Length: 366
Ligand SMILES: [Zn+2]
Image (tube, rainbow, N blue to C red; front, side, top):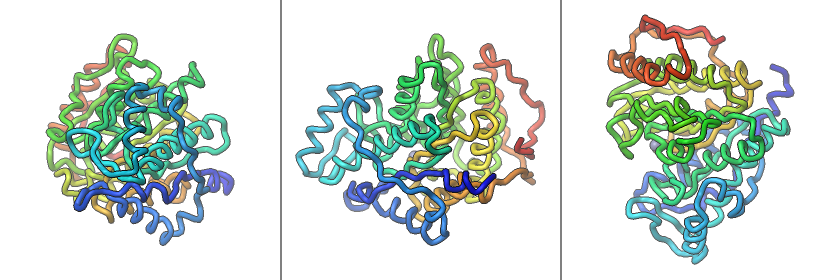
């Protein structure tokens, strides 16, 4: 990679995302993003990124995904400048949420628009609140607007002949993103997640509807799944489908709550496991869509694990530390291999993927 591509990685961020203030002891707190920025600065990665202030999305832009009544109901609540909850669960808002939520959507739209226009090659949206649980007409799971879904929808509405792959490695299933694109054949949604766990969706036979059959891939993994299971699921369950789908851009819902230190799940992924996932996705983007990849921050509630993960992904995007081959000493669990095999079996009338018969996880990255 040339020097030019190093400076061609953008990062949309603004301190406004720290003004979305959480109730006491709420896991989705401003310190999460503060710790990410701190580590990016300490490691020198911040200086390698082209930092940009996100624009504010307007209601028409958000309306490519969310229903007008929902957008105006949210806007009216946020404009009052007080704190409260948007759903019956845990999606809070504070006086600063009004700007944060609309700029989080704007960051994703602008990131993807610039990639598609070749203004920059790839980049990150380091935003709060997160998005992947938000439905068309409902806030859910700390998410108000579905940042990645609006960005993907804005790409296909501007470029009707283009296709978008969304890879979601947050430990929770991205129910909102799945539902928004369940009948949309131009968007491939793939998720690896813990099951059982919130929100309870993401079964292996949820594969998309009608023309979109085969463009929704769920790989639920049981508690205690770790690096080898996640990497196996990615390289045998998701990458082969993405290779057949042939995306024009890859978007990533990057969550670090499958980390072994993150107690919101009981998965045991390590920093090395996440680094492998990053490398696999960046190399896939180079092979399949000329390096076009946009990364969206979702969950991750252990401050150190989240910061290390996001920093590594940013470094991988800048091409400083792509891992090109690796080998696991242990094998994935039989349930992992079985789940991946079943998932591919469900969608293979569309994709005709040749499943490898063994449980091999050593992998040469292109
Ligand atoms: Zn999560």
